[in-house]
Image (cartoon, rainbow, N blue to C red; front, side, top):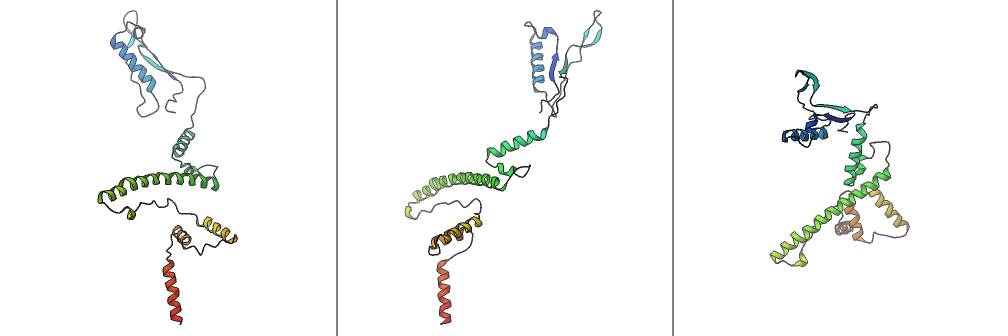
Length: 222
């Protein structure tokens, strides 16, 4: 896109600049001109500076023919590059490289909830794996090292645990519990399961306190 000049840059210079017997100054000028032709493009620095010297005629008088000239060797057709598809392609490539292509959904004519959810889940799983790798290093090289240096009991050593990257879908969990209930599987007799469910829902739950409250209510009634 930057090189879209509607043609190929062509330079014309005196033949002695191209001969094997060219001087160091002539060879250096040829090298600089080749670099200019190779790097010229559409940007704020796209320009070419040429000498104003012209060929002399037979009498030694100046003419209108320049010693050095540059032009574009263009075809008969004209190309018009659409920049927007190029920018969008690079945006998709960048998003795909970090598994966040779901951010591009909805910006065009395509996209669905199922596709967005699958891509989002993949991104979150990858993010959780990176976080877990960091947590494992901290537990091994920080917590365990501190316990060793202080001579503490390893049975009491804590561990760093990473939290959830994104909240759980409570509707899916509720549907799963209904299916369990339909299969005559009762989880109410498992406090640890209820505690995990409450943690997922970010709700407080204390079975011991609930039992004490019930007993207190019975005592008041009696």
